[in-house]
Amino acid sequence: MSSNTKPVANLGEDQILSCYIPADITQNSLGEMFVSWEKTDLGLVFRYQNGAPALDDQAVVFKGRVQVFPDAVVAGNASLLLRSVRNSDKGEYTCSIRSSVGQGKVHIQLRTAVFSAPTLKFSNNILTSEASRWSPKPEVTWLNQTGNFQNASTSFTELPSGAYSVLSTLRSAQVSETYSCRIETSLVVALTEATITGTGVLRRTIFTFSVASTLPVSFYLNLVIGFLCMFYVV
Image 1 (cartoon, rainbow, N blue to C red):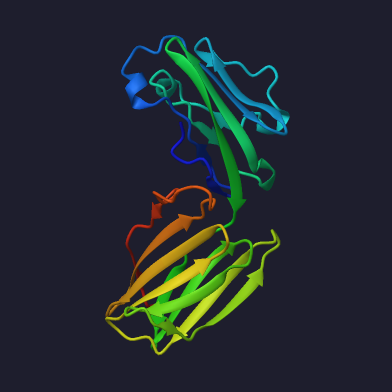
Image 2: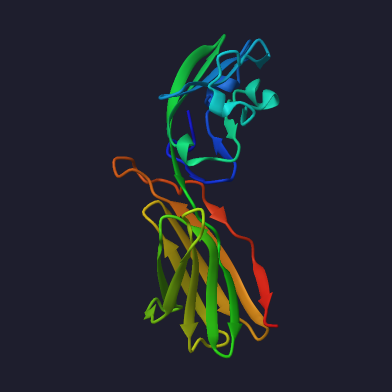
């Protein structure tokens, strides 16, 4: 099984591909565990057997970039850590698990994007939201606390990597009001709630990721809640 069969990885960052044996099975002794991860177009990504990695035929592009966690494997969790995700890593992966109590496999469709949480600053009734990297070029919208759209100006700067930095400015913002800045592409939405205080901005960012329309949307994929941060006006 997997808790997320269509993850969206942030290029250049690490990503966990989820694969595990259901809890009702792991209550029994699993015995010797065999784990294999393969990518449809490249072959072996990672293999774990006899209590150790077995990587003689591992695809070159994954050498030194992937691992499972032995302590987790013996408990039925064969999730794979993929380091420094590249655009070429996207595609279909298959996780296969075999033990004394049974066997199974799950298919994971890895998608890639570039996204970042924005920083916010407030000065002279101007609230700015700046995000360092997004790709493809996102759309940006602002709402006030009653859900009404706000007029704002947004500019994009293309980076050498092909991603974009984003600078969006909301004028006539008011102290003690809460505004929402939404940055989105077809795969990723970053929703930042910003409350203007007397000394700065209190904000929270939530990322959500798209799921295939043929799947029931019963949970947010890779829900990431940004911790509360205070930004002070210099």
